[in-house]
Structure formats: C-alpha cells, structure tokens
Image (cartoon, rainbow, N blue to C red):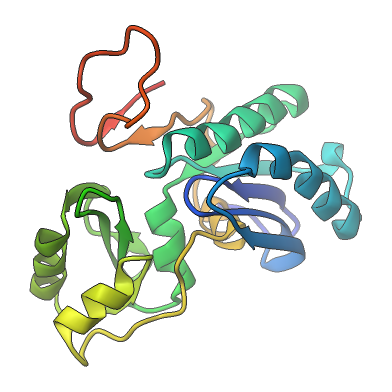
Length: 227
C-alpha cells in the first residue's frame, strides 16, 4: 500500500489506445489518453515527457511505476512493457504490472463489472470483477461463451469493446459503461493498492500471437505468462 505522498507514473499501450498518467496518491497531476490502433511506439515517449512536464515532477521524484501487461496486441503489449522496464532500471523504482481488463473494470467504479474485449476470431478476453478484485484470471474464449459466463455471474456493469454486443444479448440488468479501453489513471490507482514488487512484470499472453517471431512455431497455451 502507498500513502498520499506516493508519486507514480503509469502507461498503457496494450490494446487500442495510448495513455500516460502521473499521480500523487489519489490526485491526478497530469494525464493524456489517445485512442489509436497503431503508432503507440512513436507516441509513448513524447507523451510521457509531456505528462511529466505538466505534472511538474522530475523522474527522480517518482516512487512507483506501473504498466499494463495484457491481454492485448502482440506489439502493443511490448511497447509499454519495454519502455517501462527500461525506466525501472534507469530510476531503480518498482514497476507494477496491471492487466488491461482489471484497469477497465476498475474504471467503471461499479461494485460488480465484467470486462469483455474483442479478441478477434469471434473470441473475447474476459474478466469478472467484484468489490475491487477479479474473480478469476483473465481468459480468452468464444464470444458467446463469454456472454454466458457474464450471465451466470449475474447483474453487473459492462466495459470493453465487446460490451455493446454483450449488453444487447444480456438485457437491462447489465448496464453499459462508457469504458472501452484501459486508461493509465486506473493502472496507477490499482498499482498503488498493491505492494511494490521486487521483479519486473512480464507480458500476459492468452493465446499465440498472429505474427510469430522467427523459430516460434509452437502454439502458446491459454493463460500463459511469458518473459
């Protein structure tokens, strides 16, 4: 846990946006969010510099760092993680990993929420959230199966890019939030609720990437965390 004087920088590039936030405790010092399908690699560093300048805080004054680990796009996940791992080494500050689905669920501010995000191939990333904690680890499954899991979970607020279709299928007991992408503000807030880690976070892959690295021929198992 951290007190109200803890300064933290958080970033997200893992899905369809790029966002950076600097907080001191509960107070948001500076924040920038831009939806984008690609281009996070070129956008992130200038965005971090701008947010830190507007926050009027030096990098050396930061106490904590945070980043989304996934699930997300193969390239997007690595952009944010590589940047923040480098900053962790340079500043010698703890770096906390937060999943994209946790960040979206927390951003609804609802007691019960379901983060359902389009994973393509008629599949969805899913996480169920209750009273500030996930019910199970993020998973990928057929979209219809994700909707049924939400139905079994019961009335809750929906978020993520799959939320509108899920809301149409589930009915009035499943209100639709405005949250479609993770936001670094909520990445920071969740990180501040957790103990500072001693190690760097790894990307969370729930399935094999569409674009494979050389000699990467073996399919990844579901819910596998790779370095």
